[in-house]
Length: 312
Image (tube, rainbow, N blue to C red; front, top):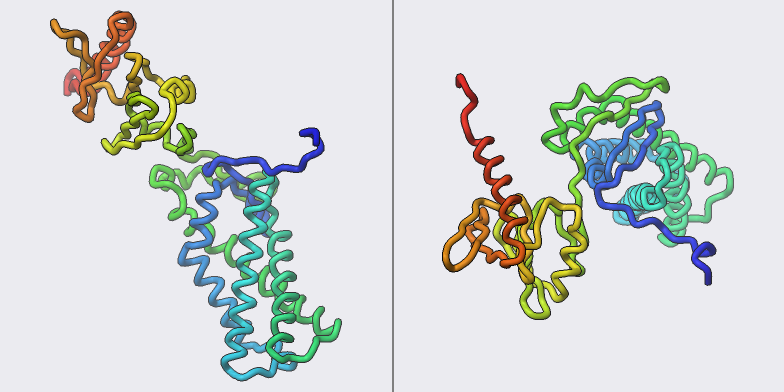
C-alpha cells in the first residue's frame, strides 16, 4: 500500500509541547511530561475527589440505581475511573496527532462516555434500563459538574499547579505568563527541553553521553555519572547519530564529548586525552594535531571560567 494512503500517528518526543485551550480562554503550551504531572498533582486529585463527593452526596441517580452500599460504591468508582481514563486517553491521542487540545471537547467526550458506560454498568449490577429522558438528564448533570470542575481548575488552581510541574529553572519565570488578546495566558519562556537520541536501540539524554569505546561487536557508552552501558553495534553508527554534538573521534575505537575533556597529556608513550571521570583515552597518531587544538581550547575555556574576575 502506498505511503500516502496510510494513516499514521506522528512519533512525538517526550518533551514536545502541546497547545491546551481551557474553557475560560487560558492557553498554555505544555509538554506531555508536564501534563502527566498535572494529572497527578495533589490539587488536581483533590478537585476530582471533591467534585465526586458532591455528586455522591446529591445522589442524582437515586431513582435509577437503588443499590446496596457495595453495589453503589462500585457504581460510583466505575464512573469516576472511566471519566478520568477517557479524559487522559483523549488528551494523549490528540497529543500524538499533533492537534490542539480544547478542554471543552475532551471533557464533553469523557463525561458523555463515562455516563453511557456508567448506566450500562448499572444495568449489569441489576438496575433497570434507563429511559432516553433519564439518559439526557444524567448526561446533562455530569457535564455541568465536569465543566464546573474545569472552571475551578483553570481559574484558581492552575497557577498553583504550574509552579510545581514546571522545571525548577522555570519557577522563577512566573512573569512569563501574560494575558493575550483572547484573555488567556500564554507561556512565553520555559527551560530548553532535554534532547534525547536513540543510540544503538537505547534512548539517552544527549548531554549525559561522555564517551564511546568500541569493543569488538559492542560499544561501551560512558555516561556523565560514570555509569556505563554495553550495547551491541558499531561505533561508527553511534558516532553518526551524535554528529552535531561538540565532540571528536579521537581514535578508531574512541569517541569523546567536549564535556568529558579535563586535560591533555603528551609523553613518549603517545598522546592522551584526560577525562573528567578519571579515564585516560588514547589518541590516534593521525588525529593528534586536530584533536590537540580542540582539547587545548576546551581546557583554556575551563581555566578562564574558574579564574577569579579582575578586581574581585
